[in-house]
Length: 173
Image (cartoon, rainbow, N blue to C red):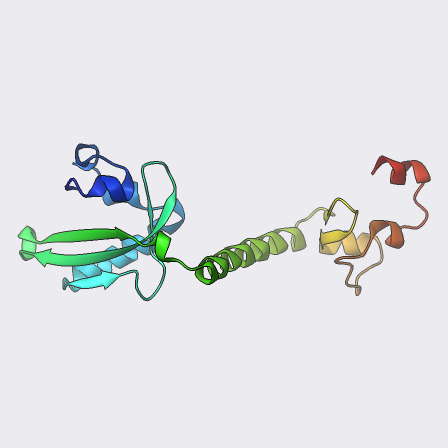
């Protein structure tokens, strides 16, 4: 990488900190595979373009935070002398509350989906309850061992499903 003085206000790096680094230093780990495909597409068809206007694009700043960005790509040279010139704009401040909410909602839905898969297919009997002892998740094995195979227990109280629990156990919660 080569960087101008304009990179510091956007990403927090001094230009000399990026010289010789790979672009992956600016790529969030959770997006490295996706961004390497983007880069391959750009190299396969080197033409000026703007990335990050049609879908969110994130970069990692020096502090380790992910910022939403737009990148203008310009092309200089060709063949072995091909150079890509990136102009990066931090557009995080442009996000409206609705955009932020939609983004967080997608991330939460993805995390929830992964957690549900993990709990559902765990070989052990697992249940997760909130502070009021209401079910948030329960594995298939948990449901089978308690004879609850066809019931939806999410949101139900553990005490309602297990009315014979000793009072001392209820008091502990």
